[in-house]
Length: 268
Picture 1 (cartoon, helix red, strand yellow):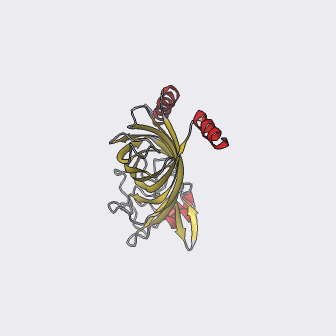
Picture 2 (picture 1 turned 45 degrees about the horizontal axis):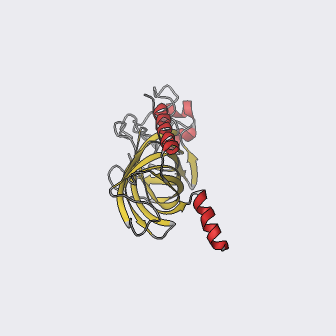
Picture 3 (picture 1 turned 60 degrees about the vertical axis):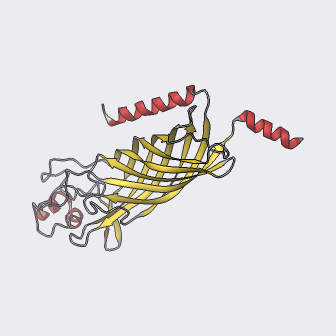
């Protein structure tokens, strides 16, 4: 099954649960935190070259108080540089998609006496858009269209990579009730991607002169090949990862009937 079809299936499943669930609690979440990447320039070190991210989400806690369906949109940036190869990049990431949370213990936002807090796990399937750039004498240059590894030329059988991709987010978090309407969440998550070009690096260095002839002088300069044609530039077997970790402020949405009752009490 193609990734887009699977994403549509997940969205349909979540939509069905949202519509037919008999008892639920809705909330809106605002989030902010850090982001980092792991790939060819930074293969092993977590929390290295971390940047910002922020976002918002809509969540629904179902009847059993341990399953939460959510959708979110996040925007952030990842970056890294290598002193040995002179390769560097940054990329903005726009991520949109559904996820499912599993609370370790029953939890409902706002019910402070019954539910103080709980750890939880989450997983999902999301769409994200990236835009790899490199710093060239103080100017940030978009890389995807250049083909720095010979994409789109006779030097490489591959076409240009796609900037719109699918990722698998998963991680863990902690929820704490603050008041009748607010809760605080702390969450850490990794994203497994199916691309090795989040950093525009994957294969081998190609012939600089030929790359300049076919893809242009800028592509040749930014390949940073330095006359080392055929040597490994990246590891195509290992796909890139990125991480979002954040703090969320969650706000409970009251049903319309409850809002009317509260309004009537205030008038009295």
